[in-house]
Amino acid sequence: MTGHEEDVLGQAYDGVLMRRLLRYLVPYRWQVAVSLAAIIAGAVLQLAQPYLTKLAIDEHIAVGDLEGLGGIALVYLAVLVGGFGLTYLETYTMQMTGQRIMFDLRMQIYGHLQRLDLRFYDRNPVGRLMTRVTTDVDVLNDMFTGGVVAIFGDVFTLVGIMVVLLAMDWRLALIAFSVLPLIVLITQWFRRNVRETYRTVRVWIARINAFLQEHITGMSTVQLFGQEARRFDRFNEINAAHRDANLDSILYYAVFYPAIEIVGALASSLIIWFGGGWVLADSLSLGSLVAFLLYSQRFFRPISDMSEKFNVLQAAMASSERIFAVLDTPVSIQTPERPSPAAPGPSGRIVFDDVSFAYDGSNDVLRSVSFEVQPGQRVGVVGATGAGKTTLINVLLRFYDVSRGRILVDDVDVRALDLQDLRRRFGLVLQDVQLFSGTIASNIRLGDPAISDAAVRRAAEAVHADRFIDRLPQGLASPVGERGASLSVGQKQLLSFARALAFDPRILILDEATSSVDTETEIMIQEALHVLMAGRTTIAIAHRLSTIQDMDQILVLHKGELRERGSHQELLARRGIYYKLYQLQYQDQESQVARGT
Image 1 (cartoon, rainbow, N blue to C red):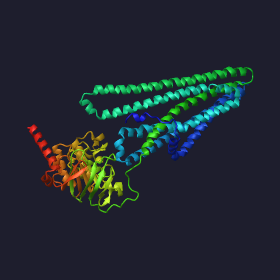
Image 2 (image 1 turned 30 degrees about the vertical axis):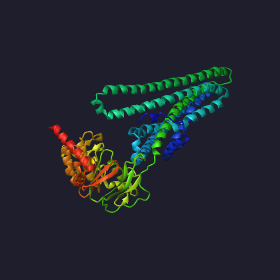
Image 3 (image 1 turned 120 degrees about the vertical axis):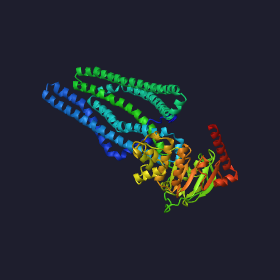
């Protein structure tokens, strides 16, 4: 994740974004209603406490009515207990609602990410997308649980206190309100400065995440080239900048809350000065003066709370803007509204008909490529780096749509087929094997309940993966770490072959499947390939020409064009591009042998 995207916070409040966010509350409207009712009822009980104190002083303490004072005390106790219960109800309800909204939102984002095409991932780093699903959703949870609904309680409390003060004595109420301009100035200063420090903190935490992701992933390179000290110093600089930004934020908070307290104390002093004089002049009761003091203390608390909620709201607007940017990204590659029905018993026939494709929309990676693969035929694809070999697979599996021409699978355009039906026909084995946290067995079946334990065992035995699996302490139940870190490259390749065999595809695609394994493992894989390819249409992309010499047909790509096709012997006889590639590899192998001797 890069820091520049976090630089812009957006508006403190955006009506369009807020309306979209509030839609997530709709399924939980009854919980929100209960919470809102609890907040308002709790605010009413908060307003009742100073007034009960006024009644206790004026109607009972001042006249010596101790019996009536006991009744007021019981009512006061009941108000306190009721306030506790309402606060518990509101907090529990909103926290539970917030967790459910977080769940819904994360499921929606992840579901959308699964449908987006690879072009989206080409331009969006993984770290940035993880931040959307984790940090940004957490920020929205803060808004739902402590912002949107709770702010009604603060507003109700403020308005209620103002009404009660004006009703009790408008003169003293105006004196209490006289400090409001100071509150406004302090609050505006706080918001402006905290907004800037919040932006800075976001930038630096983004840079910390980016640095850690890059350097933890590449730790072997850091250690190999002895860069530990330099990388540590660089992380120290970034971490220190993040610390300093947080310290600035702490400074503003440390000033803001005491400043609000001082203004509140000033208001209390004015109330005591003027109200005390009016009490002595018998134009104000002592109970009213005490109630005014209690109300004034409660008056400034929601103001400071609302200032804090302003920051929560501002953060939520920024996070929601980034989340909705992901959710609003259109799914360009999807199943058509009326997909063509799948042919019964698919044969595995593939046709490329004048196919051209460009990743950027202008520079063609494939240029007018046409060929046909018959059911059960084995086809090798070779060419220099950048010739377009892997791109053939990307457009065949419809990870990208072709710019011109068409691709047919079993005589149906891939764009007319249901996506899942299309991709179920293929088994794909890549050079860089993707394994997931779990067990050996779960990585072979990939969660498909239709693949039994016996089928998993048979697939592992067919590709000779059982030789290393049986040496593991728990066999097929042995745990696999993140990205298969506990397994060798060769072992991961064997598991990928077992996975492809377990799913029993009609068409098999091998993309540099043996280029990263040692000779002994390659021999085992070559033996397994004969089992794996039997009766299946196979397309094998390879750098090592030795791995595809026995293919029925070999396609030679050069700069995105299909320049040659034929069997191994036919292509050698032409003495064209394939012949040159073969000579280069043969000479390289001879030189390696010479150096070895």
